[in-house]
Image (cartoon, rainbow, N blue to C red; front, side):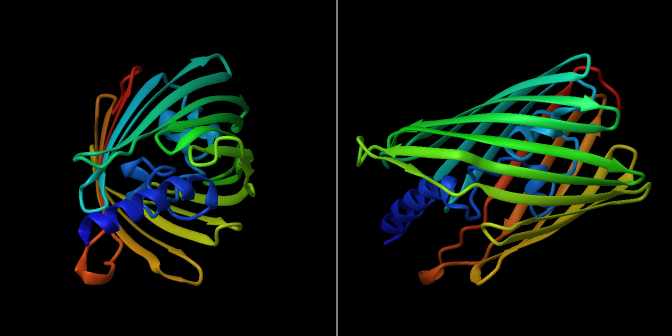
Length: 280
């Protein structure tokens, strides 16, 4: 029964990349997951490629890597991205690989390219996404994003999966299109804490998160996310961030509840970012 459930969840996951539901493929960052997915209005470097390409504009060149264990630890996800600065222009790219750890015949690659342009304290970005895998012949979509700063507040408007289409391996001659997602995000950045939120008007997702610095190199993270009308989608998350001389280590654990038969689907995340310009 466990194998059957895993195969079903993996199939659902691959479809949900375009179907506008909560999933691990579109959310590879431990920093994000620890705060309920609410980093759309934050400048987080190359990990922003999967959320809001405008968030690449940190003023630093950086690389980012994350590892995810989810669906009973049977399916894993690896994400590697990087971004660099050319004056007011930021260019980034990412590759993501989802695969099983046993005999299940499944894998999926997601490739991203992104560019962001900063005007004063405001940034606008564009991302291109491509999919290929054992269940996908080809797939494509575009993301558009912005971050507008006002005093201690950041506001974000993001359109994800615009012009999305995918050709499934089971129907190689048919390309399916999908509805774009409209996301609003807001963050309050204070001296003692950061509060973050977002709402996805298409999928019905709502996320809230907080970061509380404890020392000059350590923060506590927490968040809550839900999808309206879906009881099993509610989740609580906790995590930590350790940052020292340009190196950020994020760890998150998501309490998503359980399915029938007592099988728990709580994912565990570890992310690592290195900023080449250093700093604490």
